[in-house]
Length: 475
Image (cartoon, one colour):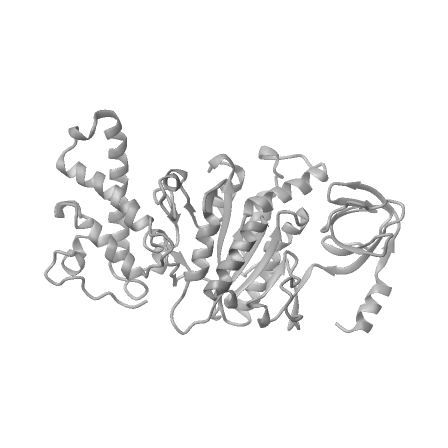
């Protein structure tokens, strides 16, 4: 935009000195005319500085505005408000890859200014259901508990449910380092960090720089001491960039949003300041609708190569999976990955509790031409054997291990080895062939008659079979 255009817009925009009330991150302006919902605002301070805001509500001649930089120091009598007659937008260009931006999309890494190719509305546009393509391709994260048992599919939204103090950020960094799609396809990651600490931000930047992953990452960074209201823009800005890279530049884009709990807390803070009637546990009643506008921006479009896949990360307050944030997220998304505090205390990393985990689209992304022909059968057998071993642990606590049969002891040992070898892989990435191979090694400890779910593949893949491991296949 030229300087002349900027000047013309400022002259034409409406400016008011009728600010009447300040509460939390909100200001109220009276006697406004022709103001629209979501319109951007410039708050002109008496000292000459400027803050940005957005219209949240217009009731009669009163406009409610959320101020992104906070309302501290605003003088009701001396502050002016200018309505800019445009919605929130972000500059996009291919050069965003490898850059670190703040929560509103402005570069903060000290690099060269970004010359925008386009300026896009951050609210995005919903994908026409008729044009939405079915998710159908495997994304390899390098995490056995995800790739083998809860496979992530291109175009899916699969949240990670964590708890306070659990290594969700470390898991996210590992996925960013290792995630890949079919060879020959370009892959990018958009990472939106909301309300994280300086230590966590330093950890992510260190991981990206030392592993070389930063060159394919667009990093949106909203710190814990940044304005709370800025967090409401961060996921929308991140997804706008993701849609641009996917549907205009034909990239396969993985969006990681951490932590959605901080986003919902910001939503509650604004709702409280607006004196709205609270819903469950004080969160606004429209939180389900608001979250759906974020999660539903994942997907694929017929006739286009690119895709947007989401891995939202959220912290469950008090490890309560029925809390409104994970509860509503589970309704909207297509499964969940749940982290276990019990496994974390035992030193298992990543501490993924596979039994409550689910990927509803897994069957669409696996099979002979995508992963391997035995993938579904191996996952079913591992689930069944591990669940039986977990049940036997509770029985042993009552009657003791001496009361178990030889087969029961094998299942008990299988559960321990499953957590040690499949789940507890550490920070080393694995291919899907490695994951399935380890699964067969573990199943070989069980009696052959117990392997009912993989009976069609025993001759081909069982370690004791004459044909050995068989053909591993390509992704």
